[in-house]
Length: 381
Image 1 (cartoon, rainbow, N blue to C red):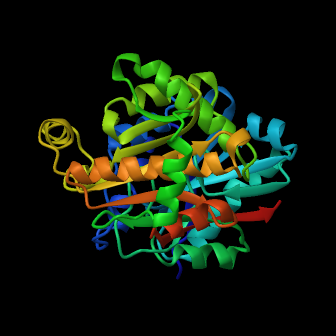
Image 2: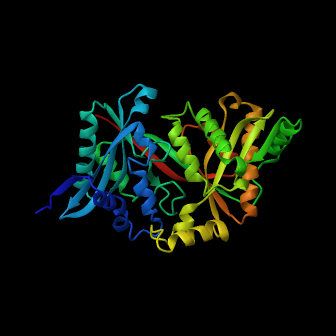
Image 3: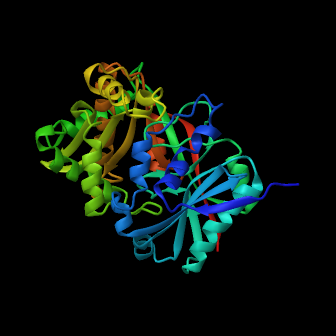
């Protein structure tokens, strides 16, 4: 006799803790999974602490089998998505499940039913929680650990999605770049030198004494540069403030640059230490000693060898121009040199939309190769 699957809505802090810690059992035999910081995950899902919930609603559910948690999912309704994209789109996210189609189907049925009851006509996901946080489900590249703010998955998840009737809507690619050799072809080097010769183009490090204003500039460039991308959603003021606060511990001045044209910020690149490498042995715990290990490895005696570039962009007015391309290449090369000097060996540049041919060609020109693929799914409701 088949044991029935029970779906339970998350309604208490205890439920939320079970929701957050489920992956420990699912990934116990996966050497490439990195335990997230439990405290951070709890805060992301706390509707009183995450400004995402100022414009969005979410429900969280657990799947139980014989009283044991075997799966989880969220469903989200973001008012800004409907306002910006003029569609009644719902989202799902945080999907994790045992290899059981009935359990996966029960979770997805529950999420879809809630979205449909609110008038949503289509679902897209996984977004955990939004496109500006963790997006996509890993479908290729399981043989290496995920980088900072990127997710991992079990290979059968994509089969559970397909069997449920989910269809691919977009792939998000992660690129890998080694630092053991110069990456810019001679023609690109000449382009950069020519563009910077008259002094109009200048690169500068982020000024930590003026941190908040410089980060506002960086995120403003991001909002502008990516505004016409698939499902793009600009940061709200509250989200900007929280992002600026949260990133301060990770920001290194010599890893984060702004490119100016005639003194006006026009492009930026943020390179961050790969926190997942730093916390890999903490088992998700900051207390009692984890916080000291984190700070020691991050600030006092940096030991990390990998970095991730989560933010890079050129304002729209300079996109598809020679100067814009020169600024982008110059930023990449400066950040690469600085990271190599700090002892780092390679970077992940992610994520990139599969149909962003301008950026994919640029990355491949400097020797990057695609090593992970994160899939976005959709289904009509």
